[in-house]
Amino acid sequence: MADEAALVENLRNNQQQLINENNALRQALENSKSGKGLIFSKLLDIKKDIGAIGKDQTNTGLMFKFRGIDQFVNSLHPILNKHGVGIITKVLQNSEDYKESKNGRMSKNVRLVMEYTFFAEDGSTVSCQMPSEGVDTSDKATNKALSAALKYCLIQTFCVPTEDMAEADLDNTQIDGNEVISSAKKAAPKKASGNSSFRKPKNRESSVALVDDDEL
Image (cartoon, rainbow, N blue to C red; front, side, top):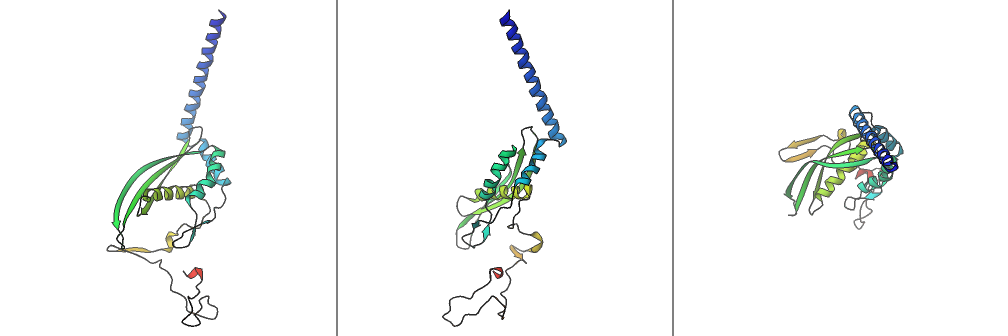
């Protein structure tokens, strides 16, 4: 009789546990639909913990400073873990084409539309969609597009302080036939003056003129 009573009590406890878990899941789904889930407060807490990410990487071709995707992931990974937020990645659209460059090399252009879903332990979620492109003459076009999409998703979701985002209002782009003409062209060099940072070579043997970085 004692064994039967213990078995009944164990079954009753297991049943109650299943009921509690089912109620918790139902509440999480209702919170997610009504916008009352934990994910919203957690995203705000994450935003508070994120500081500025400096331009610590250098483009070896054009020699400009930039913030790389690895910097954002390394900075955000411990903060996401701290607040219990995960990210699910989904490819919504994917297209690619090949073009021959002026030097005869083939380049691959990948266009993606990515969806990133941030979720909390209560089942509440927030999703954002991000388009991106990647061009490469080898096998890295998709990698570049994925990296760019995640980078700007994190920048715009958490408003990470950054200076490498192009300001759309500074450019006036027009399409003339197959040629894209942009008004945001390199400014003409300033004329030399007493206060100018542009210095003329002393003679023809002089190597190069010195130009202020802001004029490049």
